Image (cartoon, rainbow over all chains, first blue to last red; front, side):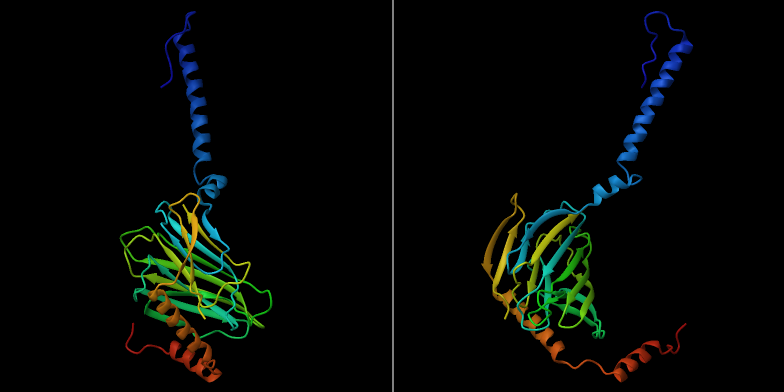
Length: 213
Length: 67
C-alpha cells in the first residue's frame, strides 16, 4: 500500500495523490517485469524451468541400475548411447522398474531399417520392456546408437506408468530407427530404473538419467 | 552372453555413488528370456511381399456391420 501521508512542507492533497500514483505505477511496472521474467511468457524462463537436470551418468560397462531416485521431478529421461560386443548386427535393450521382474509390462516395438520395416512386436504381459537396439559387433565398425526413454509422471501413485522411446542405431549396411510404447502396470512411484543389455557395452558407452520439471 | 555385472548408481548420495554387483537369479532369468525372444525374431525370415500385402489388405478391409 503506497504511503499517502502528507510530507513536511505542506504538500497539497493533489500533490500527495500524484506522488502515490507515481509510486504505484512504478511498483506495477516492477511487478510486471517480475511476472514476465518468471512465467512461460518469457522463453528464457520456460527453457530454464524445463531444462533437464542430470541426476547421474556412467561410462561403466555393464547393465545399469539407478536406485533411490527422488520423487522430485515430473518426468525422467533415460538416455543411452553406445554399442555392445554382442556378436550380431544389433543388441537389444530392456527396461524394468523398482526391481519388478514379474509379467507386469506391456510394449509395442516398431522398428525400421533403410531396407525394410520389421514386423511390429506387441507383448501385453512381459517381465520387461524392450526399448530398442544398439549396434552389435557385426555392425559398421565404430558405429554407435542412441536410445532416448521418457518415463512420464514417474512418481505418480494413482495410475500405471507410460514410457515413450525413440531409438537410432546403425547396423552392417543400414540405419535403423525404432519407436516403443510401453506400460508398467503398477501404481507404485518409480524409484529405481534398470537397463539391461544382451551383450556388454564397449568403451565409449554412456548411460545418463535426467529429471525433468 | 549376457553380462552378469550390474552397475548400481545410488542417487540417495550426493554425488551419486557407483558400485558393482552380480546379477540376481531373477535378472539372469529375465536376460535369458530377453535373449530367447530376440534370437527367435532374428532367426525368422522377413515377411514376403505377399505376406505384407495380405496384412495390409486385411487391415483396410471395411468392417461389416459397423457404423
